[in-house]
Amino acid sequence: MSSTAAVAAHGAHAEHHELGFMRTYVFSTDHKMIARQFLFMALFMMAIGGLMAMLMRWELAFPETAVPGFHWVPEPFMYDGAIPPNMYNAMFTMHATIMIFFVVMPILVGCFGNFLIPLMIGARDMAYPILNMLSFWVGAVAGVIMIASFFVPGGPAAAGWTSYAPLSAVPVYTGVDWGQDLWCISLIILGASSLMGAINYITTIINMRTKGMTFFRLPLVIWSLFITAVLLLLALPVLTTALALLLFDRMGGTHFFLPSGGGEPLLWQHLFWFFGHPEVYIMILPGMGIASDIISVFSRKPIFGYRAMAYAMISIAGLSWIVWGHHMFQSGMDPALGTSFMLTTMVIGVPSAIKTFNWLGTLYKGNIHYTAPMLNALSFVAMFVIGGLSGIWMACTPVDMYIHDTYFIVAHIHYVLFGGSIFALFAAIEYWFPKMFGRMMNETLGKIHFWITFVAFNCTFFPMHILGMGGHMRRIYNPMQYDFLKPLQGINVFISISAFVLGAAQFIFLANIIWSLIKGKEATENPWHSNTLEWTTPIHPGHGNWPGALPVVYRGPYEYSSPEVAEDYLPQSRLLEHATVAAD
Image (cartoon, rainbow, N blue to C red):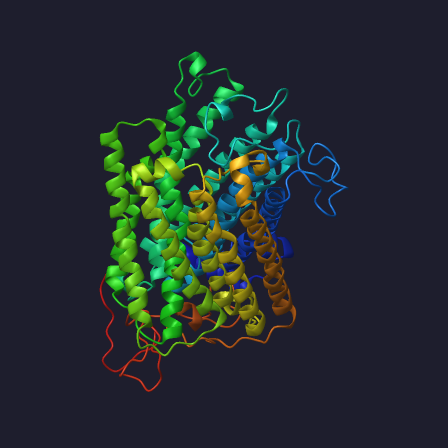
């Protein structure tokens, strides 16, 4: 039986047999329930990662003072409410690890990849539903192991989220150091989870598109998820291999990265960043697709340069493999090699610029609706541009040599990943919430959350550029112990207060989700008047998505303000007199 026929039979079977609680809500093979599981797991991990960010900012603003309300925290996490140096190191290590691997990836790739791919291509489910279920539960096990590292002898990993050798290859502190081992094991298991998902996504998109859904009729969010899945499939084995070698060094007596036995610490950097730079685009490409769809819907215009947008994402993915060395300009590489990495890094800005101008072209003379999803999507574009422009400076070797280990880099990465990925995450949750849960989110709360988050975000991260140019080091416990940093301490205090406001604003978002789940207005089948196929299913689609025959696609996903119909939208599956089904 073909995979398409198997999934169709599975969907038909599910319609006639009521599943129990465990199979419906826990060990579900329905892609929509698995998407919700990824969402709630990641929101929980976001709370943990965000708390660590707030504690770090307290230490930087008010060094070596007790955090109000934290006197109850036992040693060695805190001493009388104050953060000790080793725990500060663990916090910035675990904050970045959790936010990257257990928040951004599970929501943008795990949640919305699972939820949107079958619905938007006209499929009953994923190609491999059981593998899909396993991908979540294996990822959940990885998350449990990562959190468990806080409660083992030696505490959690504290060698930075990049875990550079030889620091990470030997116990960071005297005595037992299990946290770094669990860090490696957790990410190896998470890699297996992500590979399961990537195989499922690629197979589903290639083989299970409904009749008429050619590749160039796919919504751009599906293009972005498809390209992301290819990157995951190629990049994660490199990280998994590097983590296994690091674990062998720590536990098996090998010397892959330890100079004392003939190992090469720079080998870890090459392996990590060969994965690490495609990983940046694994986190940002889904945001680009999400922003494209939302901007088109709320501009009521076709996306400007649809094929150029798709080719630009493909170009970004291809170029991401040949720029990893710009993370290593300070490692002593040959100047000729450094120049080649500098040039390729600058070239990768071209397809990103193409996408930016196409978003602006879509907005130009559009009938723009400033809904909460649209505001977050527009913020994604603006913040990504700022992050991209600061990235040009870091591509220049002589400039990067000065600013690499400063807060300029912290500002850059947060403009790309918070300003990019997280604003896209907010936009996606608010836009597809009616389809995921059958209720509308509160628009007023959504806009209040957006404006506080937007202002506080920029007040938090833009001044970090100034700190970086002033020489303020990153990964520093107490900046006040250095005389040359004391004049910058006022900026640190301002940043921390802004960060606290930013953190507090997320309670509004959480409250909006909870209130909307319980009391939110019931959604209609197509509340945004969108063209894509997910809005042609019932308000609460069952396991199989469409109760009858699968939809047939006659056109692209962005036919807004079409002269062929009186309405300002024309769904992909609506049959007109002259509509044809294209061959793939």
